[in-house]
Length: 96
Picture 1 (tube, rainbow, N blue to C red):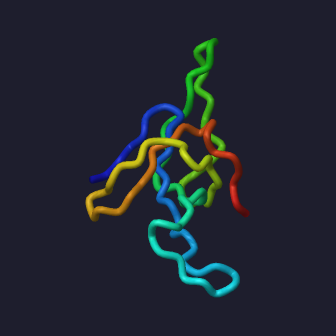
Picture 2 (picture 1 turned 180 degrees about the vertical axis):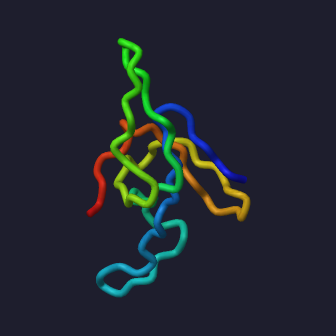
């Protein structure tokens, strides 16, 4: 399933959550934090402003971004991996 997001939405693949704490404790699935970092797989064309101009997105495919813990809508891709569809305004930062 190839996804092409519309308007100012992006498709993000969440990066795996930590499985071991800094102290060496292995975390079970139920205790893991929801990931807040991911890689952008696809971007929309941009948002139409009030005056009718197309505003392109600041992020691009391949960027690693930080987003809110409960942002977006989670779906499964064709391999069964979770991906998020979120608006660009929900992206907090680009990781450089």
